[in-house]
Length: 106
Length: 198
Length: 253
Image 1 (cartoon, each protein chain N blue to C red):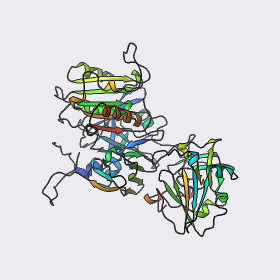
Image 2 (cartoon, rainbow over the protein chains, first blue to last red):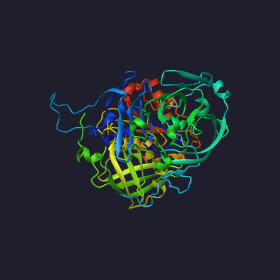
Image 3 (cartoon, rainbow over the protein chains, first blue to last red):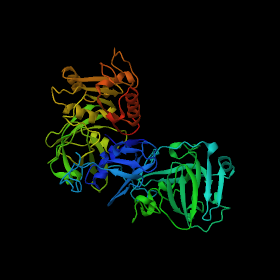
Image 4 (cartoon, rainbow over the protein chains, first blue to last red):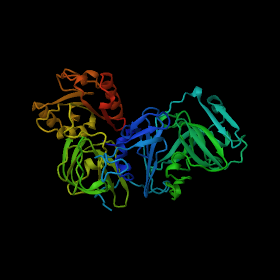
């Protein structure tokens, strides 16, 4: 990966891993998100991503609707997930209702 | 703070024409939040919608029939590049809005592709904003917002919406695409209003 | 699938760490491998990347993502950086960063575009330009004598643009289940039978590899390259769920 591009750049959701790691304790790029517009379910790493400036915009591979937006200001991360109806995050299997003691995908 | 020896980044130039924190760029960078819409001029239409639901429309031919202006302005992108003396041709918003009756104080500009940005209506008036359709003597290229974009050079360039299709006049302000996500509602480069709270 | 816990926990992964340049190796005229010393580096999985942050004396900061080029080796972290014309970070890293200089890194990042050593089955790696970097990390992580055959199809502008040229030739010559197919888009070595041209479906099916071998496919490169390579793979019958991609921008071979 090398996200420094001189021109109109389209990345994918892999490039969101760093900014998302500032907010979430697990790697959200491996989660599955469902598009509110067309219903397509996509792994976040496979979104079509525009940016990185003024912000990262992750779009649905199915319909190009905006699913995820991330803006990093000097003192905050702004995150918009409104384009998703759901986000499925795999966690280590445990007893239902009892969270596993540690987790996250490497 | 871990400083990397010898790293300066893009030089922040000091020039009386450069707002704080900006540097000069010789080229015209393209920033995009989505795929570049390709809008045929035959299908192109500009809508001005007022707060009571009245809609005014101009086709491409009707826009071309309006008096145009050649303007040379400096432009400033929030990502810190500036470009001086850029040449545009377009129709002043004073001309477009001349016969529009409204009590609105704010405008939401809508683009093909779904982009939006909000401005006070007064910033679109008094010779400060244009519907621009030529850049540097040529048709405005799609990656720079062609067939036509808003040009409001006294504010950061994200306010100069590419691929403009509608100006919605509103009694109350509401945030646009980047303003919803931490960017400043007004965006004056001389006051370095990049983010909310600046 | 067995997972290896990463020492230091999740918060360690999120923090910016100081990293000191221990060594640098030119790869081509336009690319360099940087070996960073990152104290207490928690380790990574082949295919992962890191964010690199540079801070100037006056507090200006620039952050970019770079793939890791080699498997975990203690506190040594290898990145291969391709110079982007006018790129403020890549040109600095390629031209100006000296041994002993400090940058910051955050990671390892990204759990999708990864190959875990021990993951069964053949692997087809498809690289466009500097997209070979995370794939090289996977190839280098493949244990000697592994039952999983690897094939790398690597598209570059010219032989002079190839990263890891000698190492790839050596690994392919070892007769240990690693094949390397080179595709040149602008100029090929004299006598090259394929000739020049963009990646074609037959480049992906050579050497008797077929869909029936059910390889896991990893494609990395510029956006246009990744889209066409992935489309070729799907057209050849590879199931989309076995194709993983990582793309960066429109430029490239």
